[in-house]
Length: 90
Image (cartoon, rainbow, N blue to C red; front, side, top):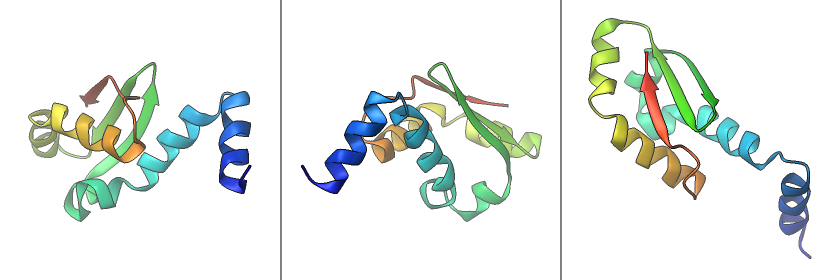
C-alpha cells in the first residue's frame, strides 16, 4: 500500500474524506473561480450537500447566482466526484 492509499484509507475510516474535499475546494476557490470572484467572496461553507457562497455585494451575488449550476460542476470536477448537490449564493 502506498502512502497516498494509506492516507485515503485513514480518511475514509474516520469520516474525514468529505471535510478534506471541501477544504481543498475552499482553499482553491481563487484558482477555480478566478481572482475577481475570490476577492469579492466574503465566506464559503458546506453543509448537507449544499455549498454556500456569500458575496460582498449584491452585484456579485446576482452574477454568481446566474451560474450556480456551472459553479457546482466546476467544484465537483475539482473534487473528483459528485459531493456538492447544490450551490447557494447569498
